[in-house]
Figure 1 (cartoon, each protein chain N blue to C red):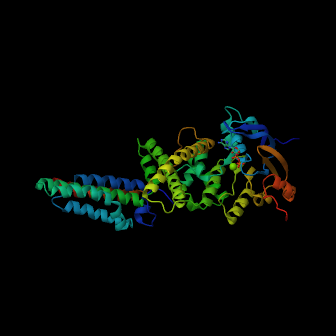
Figure 2: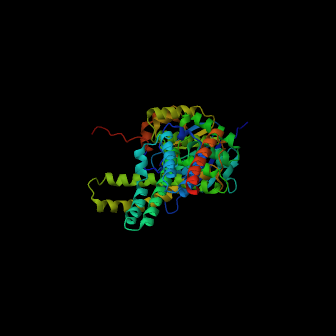
Figure 3: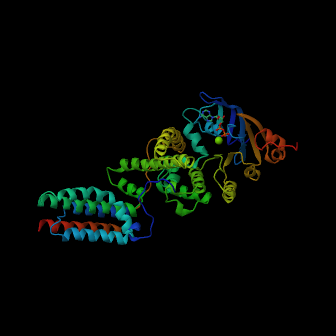
Length: 244
Length: 239
Ligand SMILES: Nc1ncnc2c1ncn2[C@@H]1O[C@H](COP(=O)(O)OP(=O)(O)O)[C@@H](O)[C@H]1O
Ligand SMILES: [Mg+2]
C-alpha cells in the first residue's frame, strides 16, 4: 500500500531565455508532512526550482502536488495546494495592511469575509506575529516581522506543501529559532531552500543538494553534515586550507 | 522607517479613535461652511477657526506641525494678499476672503490626514457608493508608491554613502543615474509582486474586506460638527 506523495517532481529541466541551464533533470518526491532541506550554494538553482514548482517559470518535466498535475488549466489548484514563501518578503506583501494581506488569499479563494479574517488570525498565530502588527501597513514592520507576515500570508491558504526560499535571510538568532519552532509545529510538508546548514540540522531529517542545477544528493541530513569534504565540494562550506 | 508617504501621526486621542466615516462627514460640512462663510462680519470665520481649534485639541495635533504643513498654502495665499495692497478696497477684501477660506480648508484637511491613516481613509471612502473601485485602486497605488519610494531612498542612500563628499552637481547626477536603475528594479519588483498576487489567487478583482458599521455616537458627533459649521457660516452669510 503506497501512500501518494504530497509533492512529486520528475525530470524537471529549465533554461533561462538567453541564460544557461538552471535546472537539469531534477527528480524527487516529498511524503505528506515530510520536512526536507533543499541545499545548494548561491546560484545552484534553488529559487529557480521553487518558481518552477508553482508554474511561474514553465519547466519541462512533471510536477504533481497532492494528486494534481501542474499543467495548463490546473495552475490555480496547484498554487492553492503548494504555497511559496519568497526570499524577499517585500515582494510578497502587496496589500495596504498586514491583516488585509493575510486575508487576501482566502478571500480570493472565495471564503466569506469573516472566515478569511479567522484564517488570517490563525496564520498570524502560527508564526507568532503579534496581533497589534496586523493593523499596520507592511512598510512599518521590521525585516523579521515582514518575514513572518509573508509566511503567514502563505499559511492563511492552508497549503498541503510549503516551499520556503531562504527563510532565514534577515533573521537574527532568536528569529531563526522562533521560525524553526513555528515550522516544527506545522502539519504540512515543507521544502526549505537554504544554504544555512545550522538551520536545517534540527529541522530537516532529509536533504536534497543542488549543484549547478543538478540534484547531486538526496539523503539523511545527519550523515551529509558529517561529510565535510563533500559539503565543501558542494559549495556549502568554505574549502579547508591545510597548513602549508 | 525610511521613505514613506503618509501624513498620519500615531497618537492616542479622541479624534484618532473616531470612526473615519464620521470624520469625513465633519470635514465635508466644515469645508462647505468655509466656502460659504463671509469674512465680514468676522464672527462666522472666527467660529470656524474655533471649531478647527477643537479638532487640534481633541486630535492632539501639535500646532507647530499643523503650521508647517499648511505653510505651502500660506505661500499661495500670501502672494494675492500682498498684491492686493495696491488694488482697491474690493481687491483687498477678495484676497482676504480667499486667504481665510484656503487656510481653513487646508488646515481641516491636514487635521484629518494627521489623525487618520491613509489606508483607513481610503477604506472609508471606498464604502461610499460610486467610489468603491476608485478607492481599491488608490489603495494599491498607495502601497505601490510606498514600495517605490522606499526603493528610491535606498538606491539614493546606497549611492550617496559611497560618494559622501559629492557636490550638488554630482548629487543630481547620482540621483538621475539611480532613477534609471530604479526603473529596472521597479519592473523586476512589480513582476514579483504580480507573481505574489497570482499565486494567492488574484484573478483581477479585489476582494473587499468586511465592513464594521460606524458607531452611532461617532456619527452623531460628526454630523453635529458639520451642522454647527454650516449654521455659523449660513447665519453669517444670509442674515
Ligand atoms: N532571470 C534570470 N535570467 C537568467 N539567468 C538567471 C535568472 N535568474 C537566475 N538565473 C541564473 O540561474 C542560476 C540559478 O539561480 P537561482 O535559482 O536564483 O539560484 P539560488 O536560488 O540557488 O541561489 C544562476 O546561475 C543564475 O545566475
Ligand atoms: Mg535563491
